[in-house]
Amino acid sequence: MDALDLLDWRRRVAGLYREVRRCDPVAGHARWFAGREELLRYHPQSPIPQARRASFRLRVAPYDPTFRFVVPVLPAEALRTSVATGDGVVHQDRIGRVELPGLGTLDLWWVAVYGGGVFLPVRDATSGSTGYGGGRYVLDTVKGADLGGGRDDLVVDLNFAYPPSCAYDEAWSCPLPGPGNRLDAPVPVGEQGPG
Image (cartoon, rainbow, N blue to C red; front, side):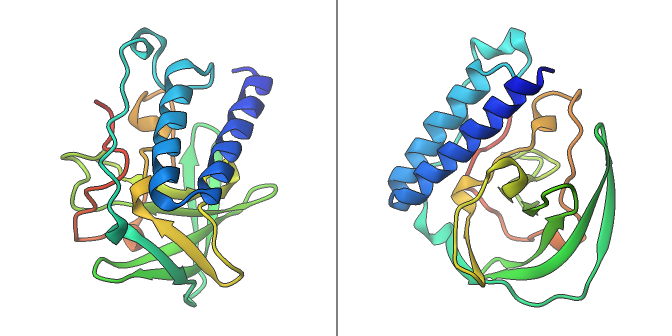
């Protein structure tokens, strides 16, 4: 993998989320969908195997405003997890929790790498049926996936949930949602997984 291609990927993802934060949620969702599909189909860092890129189409559910939340970060007992990936061991520190009314509570993590970042994965009742079995990511600020918020709250819009790279190609290794990031309820919005 070319480091400059990875840099370009991250810049494009960060730019895409910057555009999304400037739009109303419905327009931002349409922009995200188009931008994500373009990256997955054409970018050298795409996790979609080269032989499948020409026919690849992103499957994204229509925007549903009932799955958008602006929620405070609630306190949680400190916890560190370590996840083995293809890049080595990734340490994550729980920095709080977010409560999504009608759905449940999710752990919020800080990825303890150089520079760090907020990480919010989710596994829900659609995982393994319409969604990727391992779950999806909602926020991953290390890679630019940030929907905004204030000093003490976050925009958690499940319409922007997407499968990790390992959903598309097993050559990738990804941290997946642990027990504190599972919802019993279905989340029928966002990217539906490999199709």
